[in-house]
Length: 85
Image (cartoon, rainbow, N blue to C red):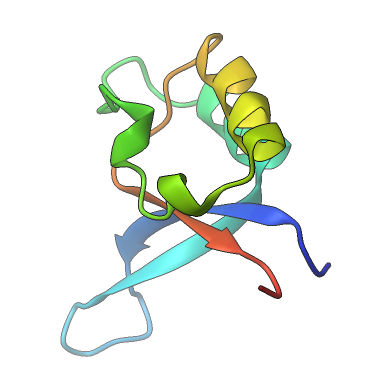
């Protein structure tokens, strides 16, 4: 949907012969639900402002992500996409 924030997790690209990377895109709520089930040894981020595109987010979107981060720290590396902007 246009105007919705998505969070992308960078993963190995299974479709590439050169073993490149690709992004798996999730709604904010969906990525954090997935991360709640992640292994305890999963690498975490230290600073949410390290997310690609963080500075371009609206305050409402930052607040939404911060609420989720306070409960669980997401995987690295992550990126943000502003759908339809």
